[in-house]
Length: 126
Image (cartoon, rainbow, N blue to C red; front, side, top):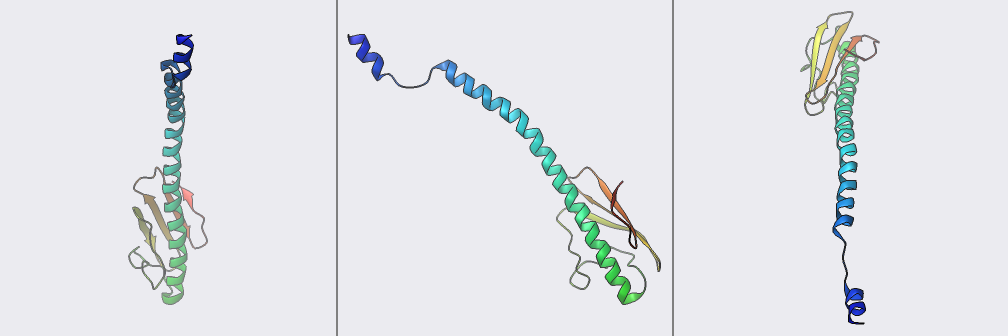
């Protein structure tokens, strides 16, 4: 009778139950961490692509004012033409004249460089 009373008061988890829970958490972490890294890389690439599209819009605004395209990324940035780059995005104007421009953009933590040939070009991955 004493053993029955003693057993009913015992509470807690067994070692095997705890090990199973830890194994399940480990499996979930092994799946989730690589996916999270891929999501981050895609978001960095999206930021660079979006900034490049915004730069193309700024180039067109610059062209309306000056009748030629801006030869530098710095000339497009700020309130005048409305280009504000995301953090760690590098924009380069590779060429610009009175008829066309070529620009590239890349995020420091991304894995792709994007290019646009304008006017009217679409953004593509290099």
